[in-house]
Amino acid sequence: MPSDKICKTVRQYNKELISEEDMGKLQDIAADYSKVKNYVYDHFGGIGSLSKLYPGYTVQNEMTATELRKVLGLPSVYFYLAIFEALADIKSQWMYTKSKILQLVGNNANFTPEEKHYLRFVLKINNAFTAIVNQKPVELVQEIRKKYEEVSDGIDVERLHRYLCRQVRKYHVRQHTDTAGGFSITDRAYRYGDHGIYISTKQNRKRIFIPLTDNNSYKSQLYIKLYPDSRSIEIMAPVYMEARSYEEYTNQIGISIGMFTMVTTHDGHCYGKEFGKYQAGYGEWIRNQTIIYNRNRGENPGRKKYSAKKKKLEEQLHAYINQELNLFLHQEKPRIIYMAKLPKPQRGGYVPEINYQVAMWQRGYIRNRLLQKCREQSIEVVKVLGKDISRECSQCGAMGIQKDGSFTCENCGYQADKKLNAARNIWKRGAEGKTIR
Image (tube, rainbow, N blue to C red; front, side, top):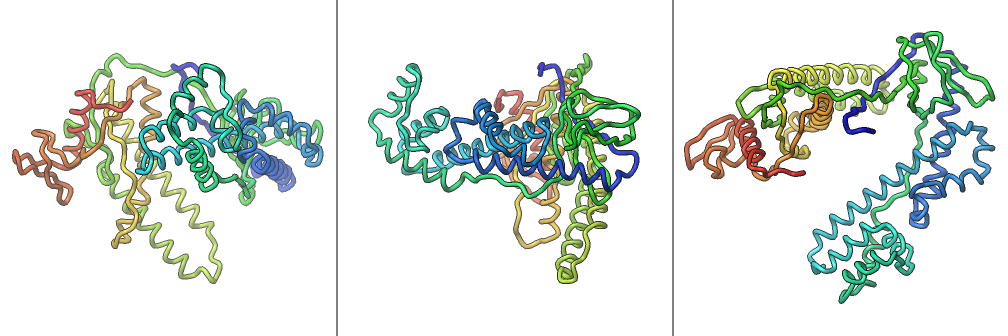
């Protein structure tokens, strides 16, 4: 995808209730789709198949040779999509495993710098990593081989290999899915027309027709999400759009994102002042509903009303977030936005009300929506080093005191809202080039 293209996900919905017969056909596809993914997880999710994952055609050929598609009666358009979707999941799981091991290596005080360098090297080179975890000789091309011999010189590689194998056994898991809530579909298996969409089924040359609420049509891979209880579906389609740019967007803005005031700029402008109220209401409702549910668990209480109310509250919160982010970008007109890496929510403690508010903090949603909107409007987002960002005085650089949302510096007497002080530090560090690229 070209760098000036932005991907957005658009959604379509059925206009009328889907018949039970047609919903059953869609559920059959989703169930078989899930079975194919589980087959791939089981047969190719372990260390023995590491060499087959890239680019993945070996797995495709082996799956073609099986009788699975014939047994399930699943059309090839669904069968191969399920294979490559499962492969993507397996690759992601291996990336997580390697990242975990890298973290453990960095924190292990028993390793010398040379040993850490060797482990990082073999984790980066797929052929070396595959050979080690399968307890085979490391065979590399000549150029990489020379580098491997340099980093392995003078260290006990066998001990490090055993360590690597232990960590893989400990942290790598084979995936499995028990849900059959939807499936992907290519343009070979659907056709728009007659104010709706025709979707291929397991029956040869038989498609079901679903009227839609709009007349939009797409020519890309879609995802069909099923809601059997309400006899409805949700269609998700990727749409690529041109990134916009505005000549008047010239400012460099430092921002601090909080739980009560959503965005504070280094100039003291605040956006999302009611965010804390929305958060508190949402968190308190979740807390009360959890208490009620646990109290009546033995009576098998339903969750339909709970899910509907939860979705409604989330939509209200997300609408407010998007509204305030749009206002922020329109009024501040930034060319560059400096922000610090957001902290993880701290769970635990002795105040349940606050814990639920923190747990429900929409920090990930705020960050993702801000990044998406900035990409759409050609605004650069730069992360700055966040150490002591809120405890350091933005005027003199000394460590200050935070209390009840305010910041006080005993060195120079500077006083400000702690989020404003943090935003000014972020802007200052961004201007000084203390950034994370």
